[in-house]
Length: 85
Image (cartoon, rainbow, N blue to C red; front, side, top):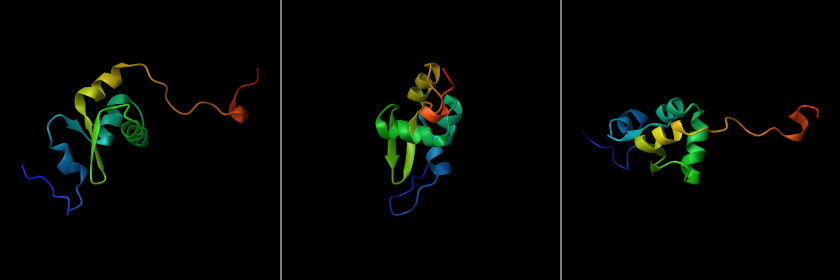
């Protein structure tokens, strides 16, 4: 397998070939969240990930662990969107 160098823009298809890693899209589908949430989790250290150039690689084992955990989907409701008490 040939790895993309840093002088070339890496694409997700190349990155998906690396064993033990998932693309952001694959991890999002596995966990049941949108792609942006995976990027947020990776940046915050909530899921094991590596960033190469501008592409996040998500550790497949950790993604499976996170998928098994209960998690809140979406943002908490703001005051104007809360149901009446």
